[in-house]
Amino acid sequence: MRPDALARQIEADKRAGLVPCFVCATVGTTSSNAMDPIADIAQVCHQHNLWLHLDAAMSGTAALCPEFRHLQNGVELADSYNFNPHKWMFTNFDCNCFWVADRKALIQTLSILPEYLRNQATESGAVIDYRDWHIQLGRRFRSLKLWFVIRHYGVEGLQHHIRRHVELAQQFAEWVRNDKNFELAAPAPLNLVCFRHKAGDAANQTIMDRLNRSGDLFLTHTKLKGKLTLRLCVGQTNTEAKHVERAWQRIREEAERLTSAP
Image 1 (cartoon, one colour):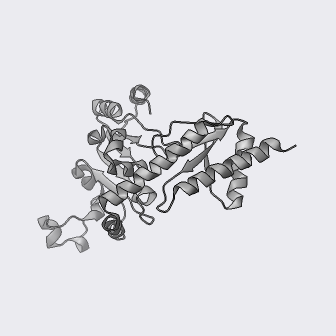
Image 2 (cartoon, rainbow, N blue to C red; image 1 turned 120 degrees about the vertical axis):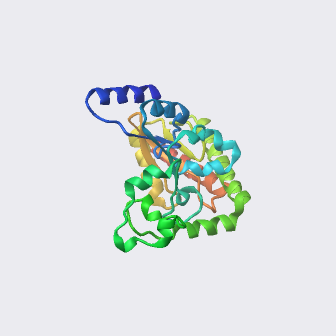
Image 3 (cartoon, one colour; image 1 turned 60 degrees about the vertical axis):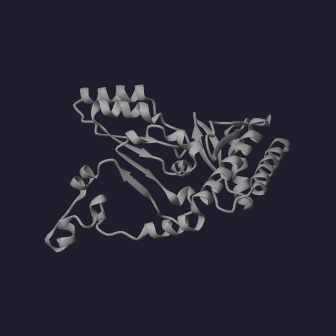
C-alpha cells in the first residue's frame, strides 16, 4: 500500500460524500509477502481518524525473533492486529490471535446482553465475555492448542524453527537468483519465495502442473505485474535442507525437460 495513494483516495471518497472508516495494512501479503509501510500508513489514518487494522496473518510469527521485528515497525500505532498461528506457528487449523489497542469500541459495537445472558460475574467485571469481541455468541477453545504448542517448543524452540525456515528460503532464493533460466519475481524478506522461469507464463504453468502431479512437492502460484509467478514457502515443522534442495533439483529438471522438448 502506498500512503500517498491512500491519502488521495480518502480525500476522493470524502468529496464523493462517502465516509472512510477503516484501513487494513499488511505485514506480508498473501500473494508475495510484501510489507506495507505501517508507520506512514498510520500517520494518514490518524490524520483522518480512521481505524487501522494490521493483518500479519503468516509473517506475524516472525516477530518471535528480534532480528525480524523491524518488518513490523509501527505496529504500536495500529488500532487492531491479527496473526494466525495455524499458518507458521505449528498450530492446527484454525487459530487466530487478535489484539485491540482499546477494546471499548469493539465491545460497544458487538456487545449483546439479553436477559438470559445477564449474570453477576459479567456485571461486576470479574470476567471477560469474549462473545462481545466477535460476531458469534459461542466459540471453541482455540487457545488451548496454542498453549500446548508454546509449552512444547518454548520460545527458543519456536525461534529455532522460524530462523531455519527463513535461512532455507533465502538459500532457495539465492539459487534462483544465480540461475540463468529463472528470476525472482519479488523481494523475499522471510520464508516465501516468488520466482518464475524466464520463458513465460505457459512454461511456468507447465512446470508447476508437472511438479504438482508428481507428488514430489507442491508449488502454488500468483500473478505479479500480470505474469504467472511460482511460489515456494518453507514453513512446516519437519522441513529440512534436503527437502528444499530436492525441490530445487526437481524444479530445474522440469525446466530442462521443457526447454529440451522438440
